[in-house]
Amino acid sequence: MNRGYKTIILAALIAFVPGLALWAQDAELSSTKMQAAYYKDQEGLERIVARLLIKSERYEPFANMEVSFYVAADTSKILLEKMTTNEKGEAVYILQDKDKTYMDVTGQLAFEVTYDGSATAESASKEILVKMADLKVSFFQEDTSKFIAVEAFETSGVDSISPIAAVEIGLYIKGTFSYLSIAKDITDETGKLIVPFPVEMPGDTLGIITIAAKIEDHDLYGNIESWGNINWAKPVPLASEARRGLGDTDAPLWMVYTLIVLLSAVWFHYAYVIFLVIKIKLAKDQV
Image 1: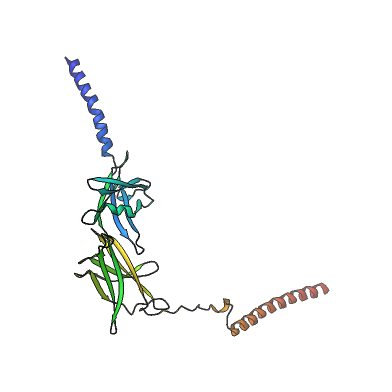
Image 2 (image 1 turned 120 degrees about the vertical axis):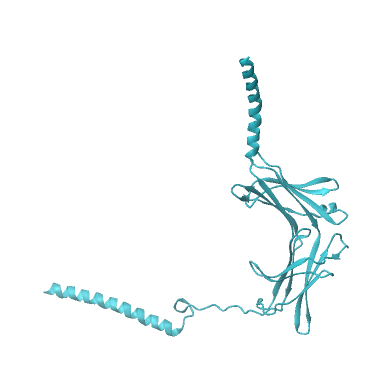
């Protein structure tokens, strides 16, 4: 009888242990997170930027992992491309004209970026909706007042353009390495935003300045950027090269003559000391 109980318990343990091992293996999988956003730059280049993160103590970039970009088409999804994340955990898909043929009746495109997971990391995915839009930066003057005008509009088709009302737009002065914020407001019912031009801001030698308009991290339009150039800023002359005095080839003549006199005096003293040493040695030999 005891042998029968032992057999049953042993069989239960054999059945339970593999399940426990599988549960432990699943529990050890590292958590991952997928981020994705749409970007359109000044040149009209459109791209989906995906970023894969893995959690250790905190979420960090997950490099050298394969991610897949899909676009929704009716009830299915179509693979656009598979890419490998870089050292920042990022993979960038450049939109093609053919991708826009999958736009739905509302003018939206649905994208999905997925990571299938591995033996040590969980799978992750991110879906984003994008509606094609654009910005136009222009300038105008009324009497002595100068203004920046930005128009925001949807471009769901070749000839289909409609203004975007109540969308937040940031205005910046574009520098060589950074952007300086000068205004942030929402568009009116006609899709326009008008702000005073910062006439006191410095430009280049001709007073030319670049104004950048941005829609940033919008749920539907993503990130869009457009520039405009105008010569209304304060001209900044090129800085003249500062002379370094003594070490410069164009040093003042008085400084050159002073150096010659000082160096001549030093070498004269060297020669005089050597002369005295020789004279003392000769006088000692004659004694």
